[in-house]
Length: 222
Image: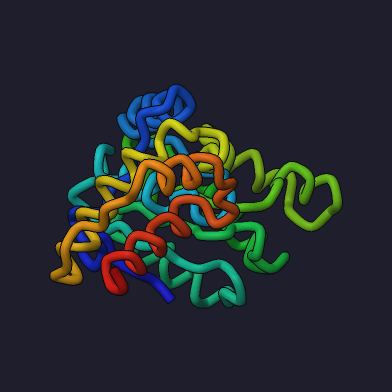
C-alpha cells in the first residue's frame, strides 16, 4: 500500500516547540537541502512519516513524486516497481526493519548502483526509511543487513516521544484540536485547568497520534 504526497491534507505538519523537537527539525531542514538518504527513528505515533514528507517538501526533489511504501510483506517485484518507476522523486520506506532478506538484498543492489553513479543529483529515488525498532540491534541479531543499514543511515533523525516533551502538549492540543474541529464541523474542544494539568502529566504511550485521537473524540462527543 502506498500513498502519494497529494493524498495527505496540506494542513498536516509536524509540530513541536520544545528544545528536543527544535533540534530534530533544524537537523531535518539541513539534510533536506541535500540528496542524502535519511533514517527516521521514533516510537509509533511520533510522526515519522510526517517528518519524512517534510524533508521531501524542502528538498531538491520536491517537484517529483513522494511515495510511501509499507515494508511489511513487500515482495521483490513490488519494491522493484517503486524503485524503477519513481521518476527521481522520494521513496519513503515505512518500518524498513520489516523487509525480508531477499528484498533487503535487492534494495542494497539498487542503492549501491545509484551511489556509484557520478551524476548529480544521483539517479533513482532519494530514500527515506522509517522505523520504530532499534535497527542497529537488528543488525547485531543478523535480522538486518549491515551494509544496507549503513546505506540507509547516512543521517539518522530520532523523534522524541511525547512524554519527553511535556511543554508541547498544550500547544498540540490547541492546534490539532482546532484542525480536527474544523474538519468535523464542530466547536473547538475546551479543557478545564484541572484537565490540562492531568493531560500534561499523562505519559501518552500512543504519542501524538493518541493526542490527535483525543482531540477528535472531544470534538465529536463534547
